[in-house]
Length: 135
Image 1: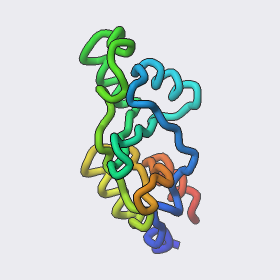
Image 2 (image 1 turned 60 degrees about the horizontal axis):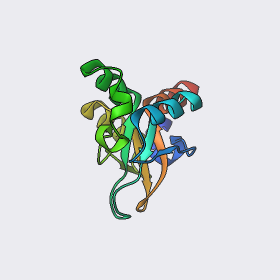
Image 3 (image 1 turned 30 degrees about the vertical axis):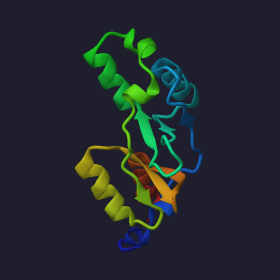
C-alpha cells in the first residue's frame, strides 16, 4: 500500500462542493458564509472568463483583522482581500506534487482545474484524510 498514494491525482481527492464569493461583497458577508457552511475558503471568479480564480481564506481574514481593526470586515470588499490569482493545479497533478506546491507556497488549499474551469478544491485536510484512510 505504501506506493498506492503516489498514484493519486488531485481529481481523486478534491472536494467538488464549491462555494463562491462575489468580488463586490464585503469581507464580513463572505466570512459569515464561510462560518455558516463550516468551510475555510471561498473561490472568487476571475475578472474575465479566461482568468484564473481568486481565493479568500480564513487565514486571509484573520491576517486582515490582525493588521487592522475588526471594522475592516465591513469596509473592505472581497476583491480587496482575496489572493488573485489563486495558485491552481490541473486535475491530473499528482498528489505528491500538490502537497509540495502547497508546502512551498505556504497555502493550505488550491483550486483544481478541469481544463479552464474549476472542478474542485484540494486542501491539506483532504490530503491528510485520504492518506490516513489508506491501509
